[in-house]
Image (tube, rainbow, N blue to C red; front, side):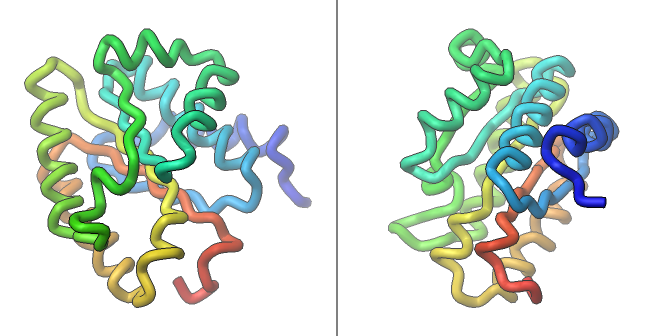
Length: 174
């Protein structure tokens, strides 16, 4: 049976509710609707748990993310003003001088966790559409090595990092 976004979302939401601090789930999505449903559910769950949510988007995708979250019933402006939600460019997290810098990303994750804890949040959830990697990382072994490093940092900090991969943009071996 092929799962459509309408019947996939309740099951996916149940799985997202099971995610705890130190987890690193990844979503391999096929349609924008699958990605949007998972993203909105992930953020809603985090806000309900008093976790700071950071959504990393491509530089030109910020407004679409704002609208998608609004459409899901999230009070985006209120969440941003309170500090519970940030919508940021992947460039701010992953890049230095227009080059992917895994060390900077890890340091930024650490800082986000420390800042969230100091502000009284239970944890920080980071949601990232990894499409940028298909355009900037030619060596996918480097991407896998980076994901392994993310797993290590997750054990040291109160983080949840949810990476999303568009199946059409990455080769099967990745």
